[in-house]
Length: 96
Image (cartoon, rainbow, N blue to C red; front, side):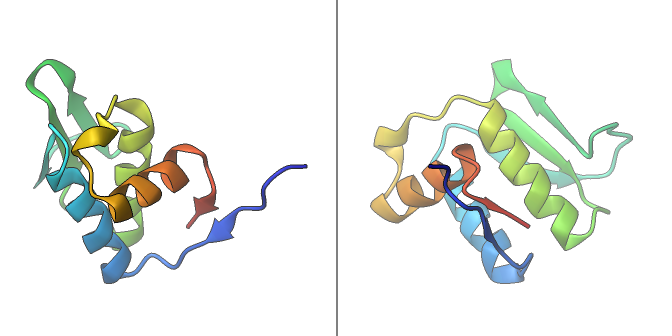
C-alpha cells in the first residue's frame, strides 16, 4: 500500500512553519536576489540555504521543501511539531 499525498495550499502559514523548522536546524535560511538555476542555493560547508527573494510564495515553499530533502538534519534538535513536519516533507507525504 502506498501512502496518498496530501496537498497543501502554499500559504503564508505554511511558509512560516517551514521557516520555523529551519530556525531549529544548523542551517541559516536567507532570501536574496541572485541567478539561481533552481531558485535556491545551498552552501553545505557554511550551512546556509539561500532562496531567490523574487520567487513567488509557492516557489519559496517548494524550494524550502526541496532543500529539506537535500540536507541532513539532526532531528534531535527539532521540536516535536517540527519533527512531524520534517518527516512529512522528506517522506513526500504532501505536495503543493
